[in-house]
Length: 68
Image (cartoon, rainbow, N blue to C red; front, side, top):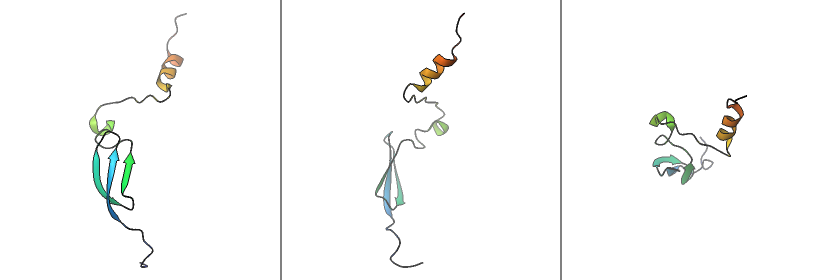
């Protein structure tokens, strides 16, 4: 490998929205993520429905059975 062309590889912290902090190594000092293994539904077994801009409500209205 050529000397002097590679970025610094230091200790880094991954910070999740839920507050979980994970120590790792990266070229960045701190990495912010929206979801991690502590709060992800696949790992927790809890299904959390995230409604962005009313999409779930709009879907329910669109496909709700209408009484004639």
